[in-house]
Length: 108
Image 1 (cartoon, rainbow, N blue to C red):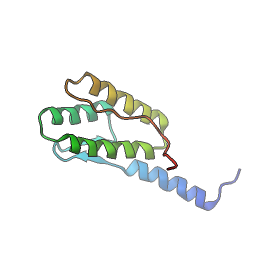
Image 2: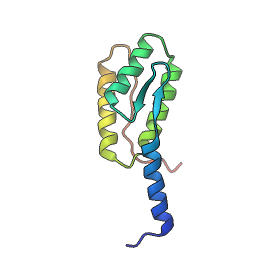
Image 3: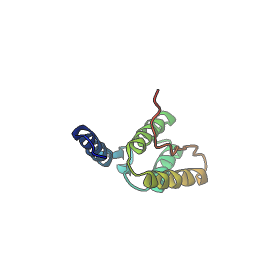
């Protein structure tokens, strides 16, 4: 099947957009995406436990990470990031942060 020019451009743009997403936790001067889900969870959980960020601020970072994962074209990497994030969060006392591994957007 031959793809239209618009389809090719959209695919390339989507890939570049997901690769260009960088999420830095300014309170710790650490990039949590792209990177290790474990490190991202450790950073956010530690900041929460130390009261350096609020639950609302953690939620904003989580939303940004979740959005970056949704834009990713690599389902295996999304799954690995999500799994390592959730495992680290679960074993950290006082941390209740959870990422989902949904890799498709809602049509609504």
